Structures are given as C-alpha cells and as structure tokens.
Length: 205
Ligand SMILES: [Zn+2]
Image (cartoon, rainbow, N blue to C red; front, side, top):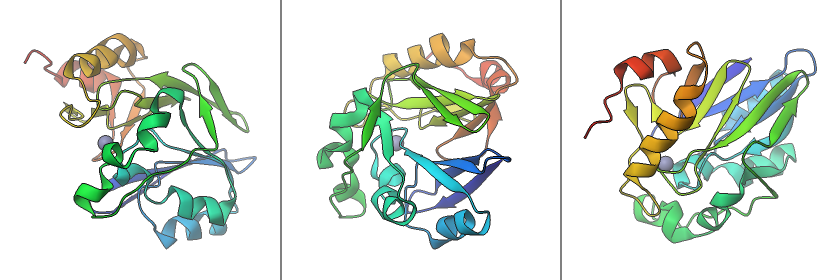
C-alpha cells in the first residue's frame, strides 16, 4: 500500500509504503511535521522499519527527527548524500523557512543496497543531479524519485551540488532503463510512469 501526504511550504510529497501482510512500513521524505502521518501509522498498526530521505533539502527532511522520536525507526540515506544532509547551507532551510535544518542519519546505504519490508523489496539507485547524492528507491513496479524526476519535468539543478548534466544522465541512463510500466512517485506533484516520461521528456536544452 502506498499512502501520500502533501504538506509543508513547498507542497512536498511524503510517502508511506507498507507491506499488507506484515504491516512493515517505510516513510519516505517526511518533509514536515504532520500529525496526520503519525495518526495514519497508528490507525493502520504499521511497524515503521525505516525513514528514508531521498535527498538533503529541508522540504524533504524537516520532519525526520520528529517522526523518528515517535516511531523509533532509523533514518537512512545514500552514503553520497551524508555530508549534504548535515550541512545547513545545502539543506537550504535557513534560506526559505529561516531555520537551520540538518539531520544526522542513523545509517547510510550504498547504491544497489536493498530495503526489505515483509515481501516487498526496494533497491537504492544513486541519481545525482538535483543534489550530488540524490537517490531513488525502486521495487515492486514503483519508483520513489525524490526531486530527480517529476511528471513532465526533472528537478532543478541550480542549487548547491546540483548539475544539469548529471540529472539528465541519471534519468536517461538509469531511470529510463527501468520497465515502462513502473509508476513514478515524485517528491512534488502527481505520479507518472516511466513510459509517459520517456515519451514526454525533452532534455535537449
Ligand atoms: Zn529538493
């Protein structure tokens, strides 16, 4: 089951993905402190195994420490994003919500590491470009793409550690190699599919 919450200054998507039989769950990008997220976890008796951060920006990490205290689950990110996530100049919070936001992950993962929730399995894909250590989670015909790939757009590349060449490379070489029917759950906006983005995207600029 995938449950989407939308909130925060920049209307960020926070996803809760759970295995129906074991009730094991992961919370992806809790970017704001929303009681409704915790309430949903309690009401559905979910066992949150992990909190995963696709990248360092404040609108994706702001609620991570808050949620961790409530559900007692470790915060994970890709190893290549560890420095960014602990650097208030790169997480950008102080420039937008006037608060220095950083998170200290409990564990870092490497590209291709697996995350298991009951019978569900997700693989970590390193997709640099939006930030140097941005990552996506892929499995069970779903891709949680953070701010790398949106419906009809890729993430911006003008923020610290961003790179337009890298994001195009990440999308074309990695994400577009996934099966066409994979549903893409982005960090902002509505979901799409790999096929739709292959057909719609124009990266020639
Ligand atoms: Zn971002």
